[in-house]
Image 1 (cartoon, one colour):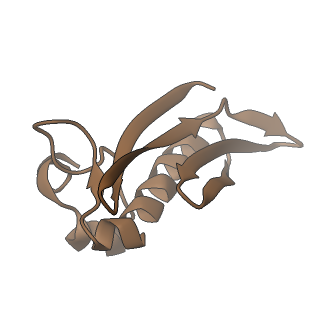
Image 2 (cartoon, rainbow, N blue to C red):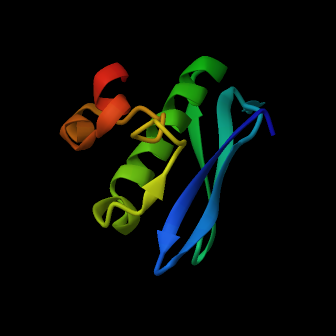
Length: 109
């Protein structure tokens, strides 16, 4: 693992941890891959991005995570908490989702 972010989700009356983990990009047969995991309350979602080099692959991973967070039912319900005093989740999104950005994400990303 090379990076992680911890969010919280309100589920009913309780807050649960939501961990996002990003793993080291690896070259596999001339293509780069980078895996990530999100610990949803329903279970861990594992996925990966590919790219021409490690930078492109990491960029894709950040966008994919942002898209997953911002299109989730938890976002739609306003159930995410990133950090006290901050709004948004700290991940960029693809251009078509930019109108969905909230708070500090809309301001800085």
